[in-house]
Length: 120
Image (cartoon, rainbow, N blue to C red; front, top):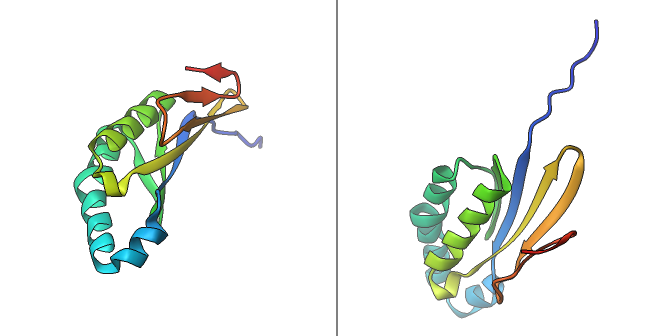
């Protein structure tokens, strides 16, 4: 009996809140409340709208899986555009395609998306 390997394309997003420790030091209760509201009102519904799913939550960070890099990048731009200024999210996207891995990064301070093969 031969073993079959099942493959599928996916984009994995690792995201966390920029300056979360500093914000917690200034206003722990308010920062935590804003994080929870931002997650339930924006982050989670937009992940679902882009056919993604949350793989893991870790404090102010998360791992999410999307069926394509396009869905993942669209989600990151929407979150960056719609997040309150104090809860800006930084995203790093790793995608795999036919066995070769490329890394995509969206900088929180620029509009450049870069990869191992160049910039978009």
